[in-house]
Length: 138
Image (tube, rainbow, N blue to C red; front, top):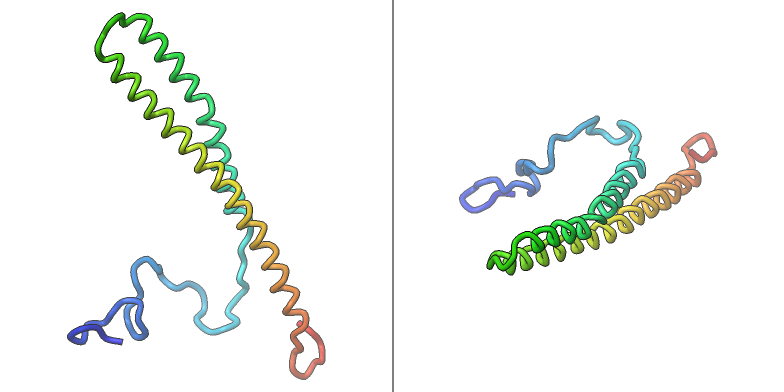
């Protein structure tokens, strides 16, 4: 399909492939190979997200200890009020990041689980397909 003035529109039938699709791989014809995917990438991502939760865990306490040391040695510096505001801001950001990582961990594991269930259901459905001339399932 052409756009205004005969310009080809990416992603439209007959148009160029958008850059984010990447290049096609494998054979173009049907039956060119097996589709293989696993839970591995999803579970690795979930583990990484879980690791970030653990890694960020002690940061709030560390900030608190450092801040106490600053206030003890700084006396009445006006910058202390600003440091307190900055600390509070970072503590909120760190907790937000931990919450997001916790949420992602569960969601990524759920994707892996669902994908496995779907894979098994699809695999099982091919067993009911009859191959012409053999009378057997695939």
